[in-house]
Length: 136
Image (cartoon, rainbow, N blue to C red; front, side, top):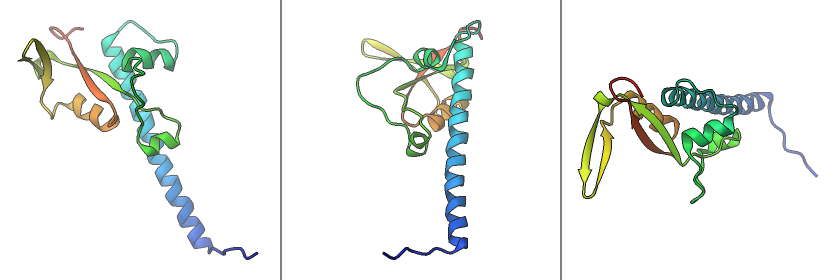
């Protein structure tokens, strides 16, 4: 049985590449949690969730319709996919558009919180809440 041999340089390059990918994923996961907390605080200013599961139910909702996968880098770190993500957008950045029997809240595609949510939660459907006169 022959063992493949690797140079020390190749080993260091491989370990560095793995560390860079995991570091990127860990930073992404941390940013998702921070955004999650910020938006939850905007929705419920006086409420402190007990644990992450309760926070997830409030922010993302409990949808068992179909499986939603997080990007691969995040799945490697144990992060689950999110079906929905609620964001709070100032009413000055939104407009109400009527389509048939229903009306829908829309915002421009360059609204900062919307862009950040789309970047951090690419697997999620972004649901917007608006504040009324600067207060929720």
